[in-house]
Amino acid sequence: LHEPEFWPLFDATRAVEDPDATVFFTGEMVYPFMFDEADGFPCLKPMKKAADLLAAKDDWGALYDPDTLRRCSAPTAAAVYYDDMYVVRDFSLEVGKLMGTK
Image (cartoon, rainbow, N blue to C red; front, side, top):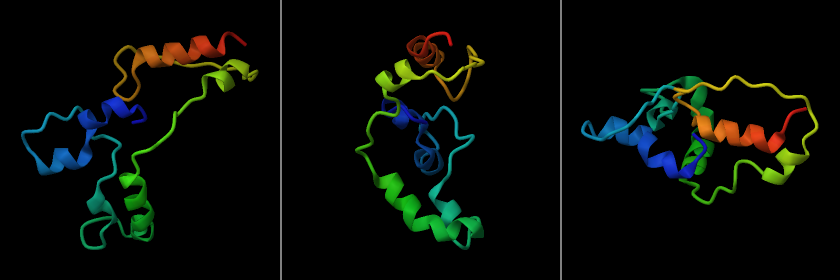
C-alpha cells in the first residue's frame, strides 16, 4: 500500500492486536511476527532488522514522479478494475493520463 493517507485503514498490526479495529484487508501484508524464529517464517529471520527499519520509516518521498511519467516513451498497457482491493481506480486512471497513449 503506497498512499500514506490510507495507511491507518490497512494497518496489519492493528488488525491483529485490536479485534474491534476497522481494517479493510490484510491479504498481502507482512506482520512483524513473521520475522520471529518461533512463530514466523525462518527464511525471513535474516531480514528482520531491515524490515523493522523500513516499518519505522515515516518520511517516504513521493512514489511516482509525474514529470518522469509524462516523459516515458515506453509502450504501456493496463487492466484497471473498478473494485480492485489494492489500487484505487482513480489513481490508476490518473497515472494513465499522465503517460498518455504510446
